[in-house]
Length: 131
Image (cartoon, rainbow, N blue to C red; front, top):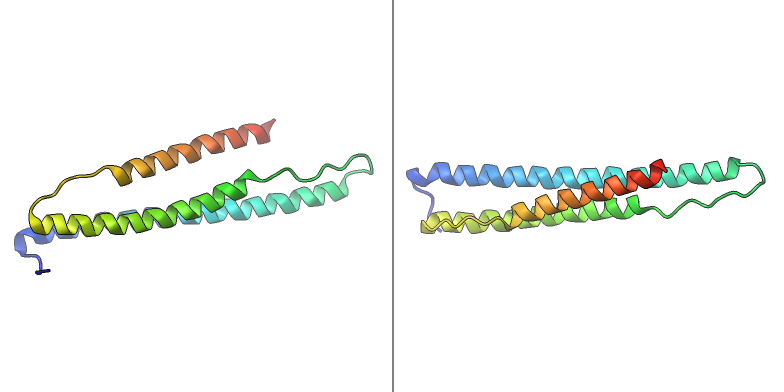
């Protein structure tokens, strides 16, 4: 691959900034997933302690934790987005060199769908906790 000439340098730099923004986003999603997973473990421990402290009546076992699945899913989603960002970066770099840039919204749709899904899941989860 030939080095970018002066006219394409700005376009390549913009492509790199976009790639780095996607990497930041994927790291943030993985970090949020890690926090959600650790919070799920904290809730399980807290629930076990509360069960032991209840009177001899009828101690309830801790409920199944969906937050643990959500945390693991977010970590996986963040890793997947990081890989997809690199694939997108290299594809756009090649298109810039060929002078045939074609925008694609696949990664944007994936992120928007994932954020919407996580938001809906959290609303449902918080609704069950509040009851």
